[in-house]
Image (cartoon, rainbow, N blue to C red):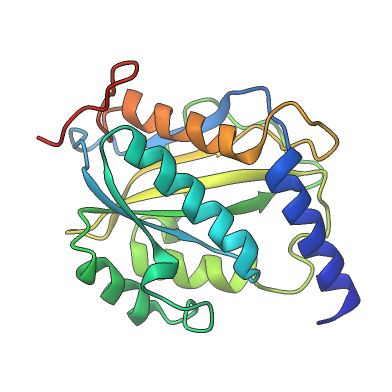
Length: 215
């Protein structure tokens, strides 16, 4: 492994255990053309070139989803790290898991002169709209060289796709992650993301201490 890549992965692993945000999701997009559906069977894919980082994404999401009564499976239980770049393996896994929705999550970097994102977005890039082109593009981008060159400008992006139509229904980005903070871990960011998806009508709402059962 190249020293620069090794250093980036070490930095990412540190962020997964110490990175902090303000506790808010910075920006959200929802499909305004259709009524939200509360999904109950999900599969989660973390996109990264580090197996350890991938498992941290997927396992944290699965744990949080199961706590609210969602049947959730990590993508690594179905698709190996070596095969993650193959879209057909991802779609086969969705079928095997009998999932009604798919979460794709990864880190994104802000451009140096980027403006703060709006809380509610009216549109997303065209390739986000459908699962297959989105997954192909994001894998190539995220696993490319120097993608994580600036650990000071990273956000966690999460996209929720309807399995039947392979279409995007919800997208969210966290506030910028602060690798110097020890107050809130990435698991808290994921918990906030799950709560926001439930608030927007795409996941079950769980009462305190008692998950909502599947309908």
